Length: 214
Image (cartoon, rainbow, N blue to C red):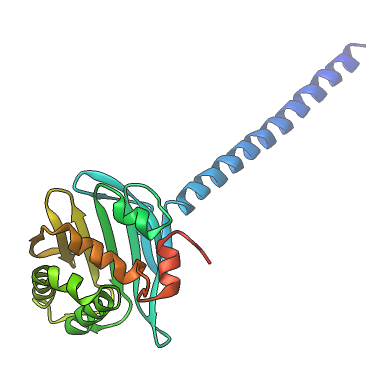
C-alpha cells in the first residue's frame, strides 16, 4: 500500500510539472501575438516609407487619416500621408476640421524643386477658378519662393506642410523650416484640394488619404 500511494503522488507531480509549462508557453505565445499586433498597427508602410500612426504638430496629437503613393505615367513620384486631429472620410469634413493638420510627403525619385512646385501649382489651377487663385496669389508666391530656396529634392526627401492654428502654413524640408509661416488659412485649404479636390492629382491617392484601402 505505501508503495502504491507513493507512486500516485509521483504521478500527480509529473502531471502538474508537465501541464504548467504548457500553460505558461500558451500565455507567452498569446502575449507575443498581442505585442506583434500592436507593433503592426503602429505604422503604415507605403512604397518603403513608414508613416507612424500619429504625429505631433503645435503640441497637438494628430492621427494618420490615410497614406498612399502619387503615381504619374506609371512612375512612383512620392509617398504621402495626411494627419488630422481625428479620422475623417470626406474632403468637406477635412476642410472644416479645426486644429492642426499635416501633409507629409517623401519623394520616391529625384525631383527638381521647380518640377515639384510646378506640379502643385498645376493642381491648384485644376481645382480653383481663376478668381479664387488670384485672391491667394501672394501666399502661392511665398510658398513657391520658399520651396525654390532648394535646388532639388533627391529621393528620400521629406516635405512637411503643416497648418499651425494662429500661425499659418509652415513648410519644412529635410528637417529645416523654409520661409515664413503663411497666415492665410484659405491657402492651406487650397493645398488640400490638390489631392482631395474634384480633380485630384491622383484618384487612387485621394481614396487612400480619405482612409479607403480600395
